[in-house]
Length: 337
Image (cartoon, rainbow, N blue to C red; front, side, top):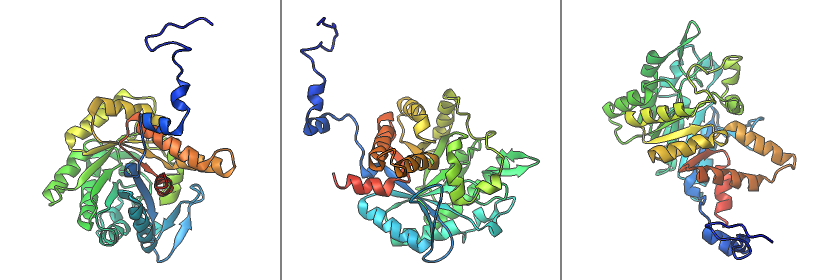
């Protein structure tokens, strides 16, 4: 058999499979690893007591009343999950054109944050800042004559961030994709006595078809209807634009940056991490979770294996952590190894 000359050696002297032969060897030379410290668990909350509602498009994920959310959060904390991200399913009667409920200090999310901070002290609490759960039109910003109003929206987002920080949120996560929102929120937090509150910017958030089940979960799908968010969320064809967006958010005061969705945009995660070297997160979004779960339920994929493989893929691309609906399952599995 002819030899293939290579600076890395050649067959049969070099046999790459030797290192793969034993489990201990594979573990010893693994270049990347996944741990419970890498996980953020998104939870959906709604009104009521001792009440859960399954989300049909997200198997094994429920909307939880605050008391049940606290039980889930305590379990997550016991497993070592560092942070919980809360998303509200707002009563339709509270939704308005301007999203006024977003700035109500007694809204569902603020009450949930206060309860979580008291019941599970020390866990990170991540709160989404955007208007879509609160608007009758389902958009992330104020709408006039079919146009999203960027600068007017910033004022509302700052008020929303402040009521959440006042309630005890430790990570403000603006997902709206308005220009200048990180700087505006950072200034509002600092001026409002919340200089220690972190900002996790949805810095590269793409207009994606993978968000469908999430919109079912928070009840905004029917509000948005046939509309889309392409005038403010990013075009999936663009990568250089993501670099500009991230650079601006870092300059404006973001502590963490995030790419959303995750798996279809791992190249963006890698470029951002290599370019900026800042804490970089990815969101394994509802559509990604739903398709893996559905295929697993049909017996086409092994749920545990694809869960862990997909999460490791985020780490390999450079993500420091992942928001994932698999977080509790993954934490349990990782705790067994």
